[in-house]
Structures are given as structure tokens and as C-alpha cells.
Image (cartoon, rainbow, N blue to C red):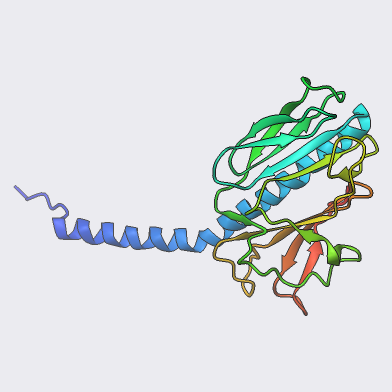
Length: 227
């Protein structure tokens, strides 16, 4: 009888090592794309919820708030509404839409919350974004909020404007938000940089992508991103 020939332990180990190397190479090559998708998702979440707040504030003729809690833990945040502020708990690393009701003290509620990817940084102090000279005026001077000090809160009034209070006396918010990966490299493609700009006077928004291989490198508005 012929002996059946099988694989030796050494041969199996060699195959397993080769498969491990190929798997590691595949994961490494896909990481930039995975991080790009997460960065895009974080920026789109804030853009879409702010846009929804603006639309609902106009159609419902009342105030809506957007709260961005970039902290790694849940936060209790106080929102002013007439003479009696209301305190709500917002999830860690999330953006939330708040129905402020009819200027009463018991009718405010969180109607939508989207958690942001944990490995996306937002307006980080150690990250120096590329110059926004490609942005149109007045976006070049929009303020970058410091999330290390507090959560970001903006209100959309019945006219759709973005203001800093829901009492009818707020001033307009003009803000810019930068989104990036922890291991950002502005020289490589695909780019991991996104930005969202908010116009206080109209409540309008723009979604931006950074194009690292242009001449020169530049920010470019995403198609169909105006609202």
C-alpha cells in the first residue's frame, strides 16, 4: 500500500506565517482608507445634524440646538431657555439635536444623537490645519472652537440663523470645524482632512475636503454641500 502523503508541521507553520504577513500588509494598506471614511463620517454627522436643525427651526418656527460633546465621557450641559436653564446629559464624542420647545421649562428634549468615531480628532490644539486661504471671505476668519474647554453649543432661531442663545438675544455664530486622523499626513492621498463652516447670519453650511496633491494644495467644497 502506498503511504498517504500529508503536510508536515513545518509546512503548515510556513503557510500560516505567510498568511499572517499578507493579512498585516492588507490591513496596513487599508488603514488610510478606513481612517478617511471615519473622518468623512464625523464631518458629515455634524454637517447633517446642523442642517436638519436649521430646516426644523424654520419649518417649526422655534429654536433648535446642536450640541457637540467631543469629550471621551458623557457630559451634563446646561442650555438656557428663558429664565430657567435646563440641564441634559450628552453622550461622549457625539453631536446631538435638541428640540428647545416653546420657550417653556419642561419641553426640551434630545431628538437625535450621532456618536462620532473615537479616532477622529476635532479642532485639536496640536493640529495645525492647512491655511484656509482657499475659503471665500468671511470664512477665512471663522473661529475654531476649543473643545478642550467645553462642549460646543449653537442654536438655530425661527429664521434659521445660528446664534449663541435661545432667548432671542443671542449673537450670531460663525464657526469652523476641522476633522482629521491622529496620524495625519498632508502630503499623501487619500486626504484625511475635512472641514465644516457655519454662517451665523443665515445658518448656512459648507462641507470641505482638503486636496493635498493640487497646485497648490487647497481646500475644495464638496459637491452639493451648500445649505
